[in-house]
Length: 149
Image (cartoon, rainbow, N blue to C red; front, side, top):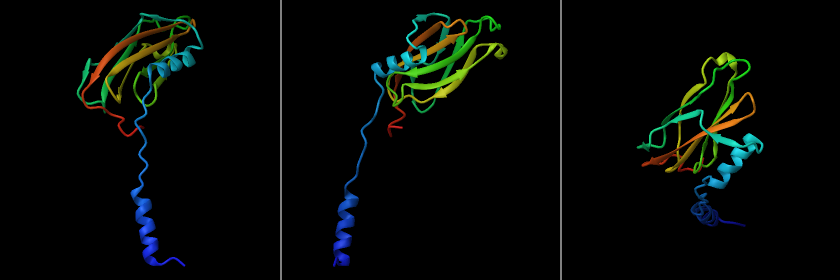
């Protein structure tokens, strides 16, 4: 039979074993896979998309980001979706907006978290099935996502 002392020693021994997950980061390969998943292999062209994000983010916890896409936003020619992707966050595909011609303007804004200095990509899916992008390099002085999530 275990004594109280044995139980306390075992509990202390188990408590001292901490499992600390490593920092998980997306890689450029994960970014390319996320782009391939979105585009289903369609070519991606540079242009039409304007990603506005600071070149230097003092705090990666909240980085103000705007994406605007040149489009008349008519029934025949509009933006279907806008995606923001990151190169070094724990998850490469940060978020998506789904738009239609009734949106009136293809412009979205949000705050994103950035885990490290990296390249951020804005990807727009048009109603004709084409994909357009803009990329920006961002230097992050105090990183977010340090807990791996």
